Image: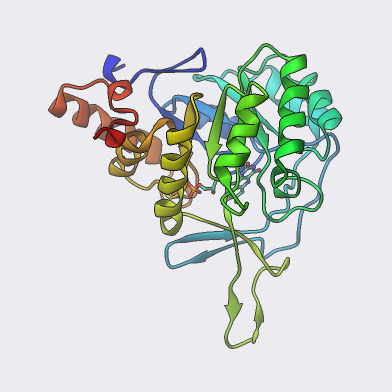
Length: 298
Ligand SMILES: Cc1cc2nc3c(=O)[nH]c(=O)nc-3n(C[C@H](O)[C@H](O)[C@H](O)COP(=O)(O)O)c2cc1C
């Protein structure tokens, strides 16, 4: 293990700043276990109180620089998911991602996961009804949701934000005021693709969330803006495919960096990112924590 890669995120000790982004490995504990070997932390699929079937296929398609998905938060529900996760050995801290439509639903969900090391609140999924972005667009509701969750847990709580809001910094500030321990930027952006031969939308849900390489500059700018205004840690997410992207997010102000779509192209991405980051820190002689936000210096 390399000392130079270690980061401390809101009290969570991580062996490196890399985190599995929510939803990418579905809702199977065995997948989280495999990723946890090389990641600094793993985030579960977003879970609600009841099972959700999600949308019909095609639910995940690719475009030239990433993916567009409308999975519809398909998930087994809190009780079944907690049962599956409870006794599983993970080699990195587990953050459970939650979705709901009200402060009460979010705080109720926390009770199912006493074994989790922290919570991520999905305030940003662009393709599910009454949840995700539908609640994450309203700073007052974001404040109430974070406050309700903070009341029922001492564990770190991270608010995952959408770039499809009027002002992401305003939403980030609402989360910070409600004592969130950090924000995650960003979830997917609304998008769609039309089959030019069939002459109709490809996704069964018509539109979905755009992720992957193509959204990285947008995510970097969101992290940059949040870092200028917030004092709590920022977790970068969106379009990471190489170690250079991880460094870029950290320079913009991210304390940790999530990786999602890149797993569709390489299931060894966490291993290779980690090895490259070790080489980078050997070359520069820096600890990664030292470079967080330094691109903001005059
Ligand atoms: C198939 C798929 C499913 C996803 N499911 C979730 C989810 O359940 N909860 C969530 O907060 N984000 C979800 N996301 C968004 C990712 O966690 C991440 O924010 C986004 O994909 C940007 O990162 P990336 O470019 O590295 O993929 C999902 C993304 C994809 C591609």
